[in-house]
Length: 224
Image (cartoon, rainbow, N blue to C red; front, side, top):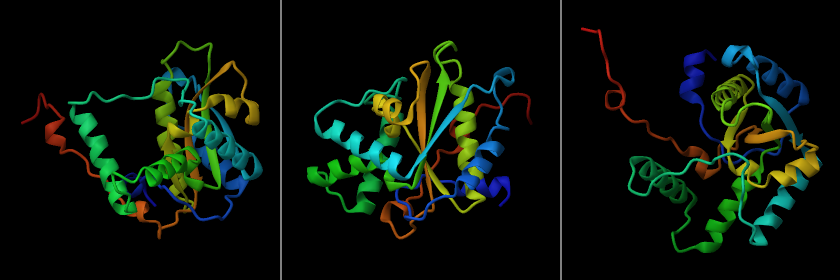
């Protein structure tokens, strides 16, 4: 798969087959992805990869926190969208299309809750990658670098027939990850990537998101 095809093919996968992803493949993906650019080659990313019993324990503890009424609390600023903005509208449109595919009605609170839990459980992926940075770095400065390596991981995964979903949801209860995965307080937990072989029969995996026309977001200078 060439790079253009990978960029055009990558999508968020929200259900996976039960097949385990070999550690050797994940290691290859991470080694390749560490070629991603970073400011002054600082390479601020650190990875915690979880699977099997540990991942199941994280899932169970996360759902328990949610069902107890404890509000999610990520360690970084999760994007917010002003109600009257185009950004909020795009987010609403995405949610509506997913719920349409999943046949979740607006009034069905049980199914909506189940969907939220699914996200917090890494969409039942057989593996997850947690990306963190050292707290000694100025707050917010490595976010561009983390975005770069995250996208690179998702593109590299396609070469191995794997799907991914980049998730704030996977880091909403960071204390669980610290306790079960031995992530020290000196590291700030930033983002998660669900990883596995896509279940293409799952309705939400048929979703194809749109993109705004380039002409509406680009200004050209110095061209005929």
